[in-house]
Amino acid sequence: MQKCANHPARFTAIGCKKCKLPICEECRLYTEDGVFCSEGCAQEFREFSSKIMVHGGSRSRFSFSAWIKHIATAAILVVVILVALYIWLGTTDPGEMYSQIMKQLKLLF
Ligand SMILES: [Zn+2]
Ligand SMILES: [Zn+2]
Image 1 (tube, rainbow, N blue to C red):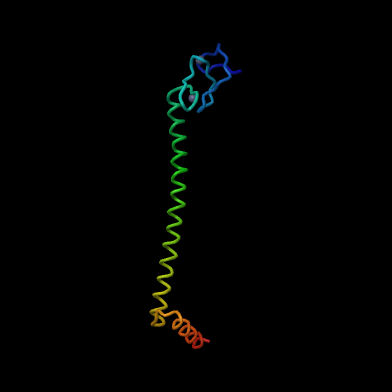
Image 2 (image 1 turned 45 degrees about the vertical axis):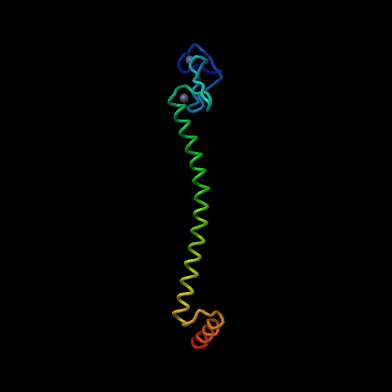
């Protein structure tokens, strides 16, 4: 048992959910989120838990947008490589490209 933060003569086993301050029956503020010592603590706790929820939600959205970004980056990379090959080899036909690449490699080595 601890002494109430506001009433040193009263003992309590219950503490504020936010600041853990021991509070007696009279000082307790009951909310849907739990028992708090003051409206300020209840408000802080609400903001704290809503922040966690927002953070968790944005994290799942973030991974989705990151996934889209990865695909977009890969697509752009493929397009850039194809354009570079087209400029280099002068063709978009894969078979033609392959023989052109082989020819170019033979020239290089
Ligand atoms: Zn408190
Ligand atoms: Zn009290």
